[in-house]
Amino acid sequence: MFRFAVLAAAMALASPAAAFPRVYFFCITDDQAPPYIRVGPMSPNQTEARFLYPPAHDGARRDHDMLWIGETAAGEIRYHAGDISLDLAAEDTGLQIGDMIIPCTMLELPQDHPRGDYPALARANGGNLHAGPGPDHPALGEIAPGTRLYLQSRSEEETDGYAWFELYDPTGPAGFVWGGDLCPGFEPLESALPSCDQ
Image 1: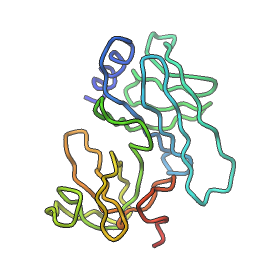
Image 2: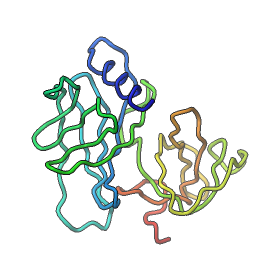
Image 3: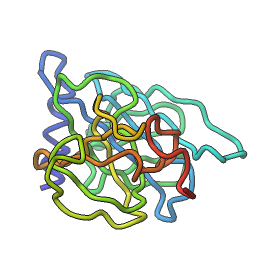
């Protein structure tokens, strides 16, 4: 199923005339060491690999890289530049940087989803998932502390100075989480807790 989705996305992306969704990949090392890499939004001929570091990171940082569409020797579609390659036809999509392959998760947002800081990564400090952006909306369930979350957007609604964020779910609406229960996955997250230590 995942292979089919990636191949379908690759076919759509390969055709400049095709209407395609905004496709992103989040690539994270198995030990979750920095950086995380967000690749996207995809376009028919290029995309961006954006390297994300935690706010307290004091080591070397890599600048963003533009990746260009091409083919592998086997004829598979990929986006690549220099030592970076994202092979869209692979069974398990991974971002190759030199000799290292980092596993990736695909996020597919609607075509009208704005470009910008979202989708974004966050971590939960606990709290509840709500059906809408605000505490008056029904609670759908609890979120375990430390859970990695993909945020689709930030709403205009705020409670006690923190915004409400819509979660990403490929099967449909997932619900909203209060920013007072969220901390950054890596980069700072406006209208949420500044760090996971609070």
